[in-house]
Amino acid sequence: MEATWTLPRAGTTVLTLTAETDAGPQLTQTFQYRVSAEALSQAEGAWASGLLAPVAVDTSTDETGETCDLAFDSTGNGHLIYFNETHPSIWYGFWNGSTWTTQLVDGMGFNTGGIVMEPMALAVDATGKPHIV
Picture 1 (cartoon, rainbow, N blue to C red):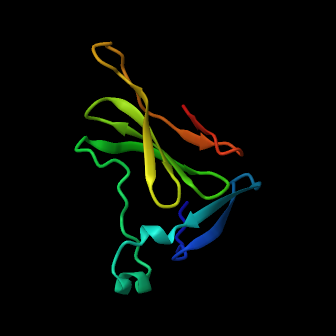
Picture 2 (cartoon, rainbow, N blue to C red):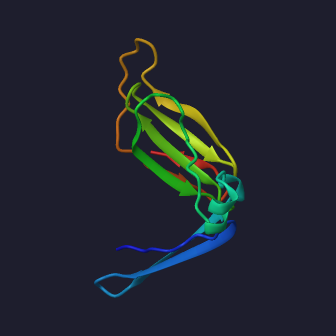
């Protein structure tokens, strides 16, 4: 139901979760994460304590993030989709270890009358290709 763990300050780590269902079978999922030292943009004292500085994905003044989904590829890079409430649209972001790159996936466009709908989900296949539904 809930897991708490501490990531290393930098490097690659693996988390394996095993859950047993009420009927008895066990389900196991393994997640691999790459923690980037570049994200630590705080002073040396903060570095020593291992605190990560927040990194903004979307620096616009738009209202975003109410609906989002995050997935990791096999190398530990993050993939993110999020909904822009100000200009109804779906955005995709990719973390390369030091910065986020974002691109518009779907939106209403100019005077098209289209509707972008939630909920949405993200999966990354074994080749690192994102799939959005």
